Length: 118
Image (cartoon, rainbow, N blue to C red; front, side):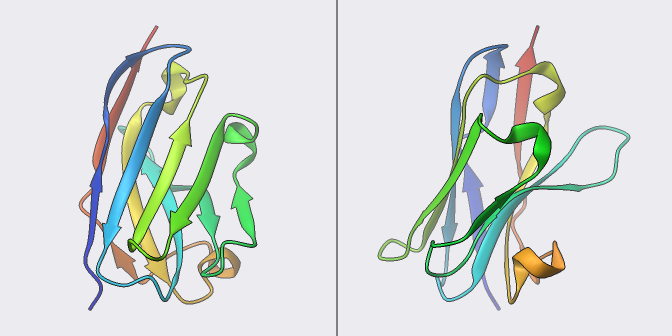
């Protein structure tokens, strides 16, 4: 079992920035960020392979968000810039095998709320 704990969410004005962190009990999986807005299904945001060499982003966040990881710290990050009200959601950290190809994870955190005001 993999434990994942997100942090860094909060309330920010449109155009602002936030950095999400995810503390993991292991770094041996591909990892990613997903989000779920009220009344909507959970959607993929960004993912990164174990080595960090390959990343993938959903189109709506390209150029604004950056995913990274530090395997020495078992940590995953999501730097979010130029935030928009439509980025408001609960953000979940996920880990799993072939996460990028499958677009889903095997292990999930509890989520952290991100609210962007207009």
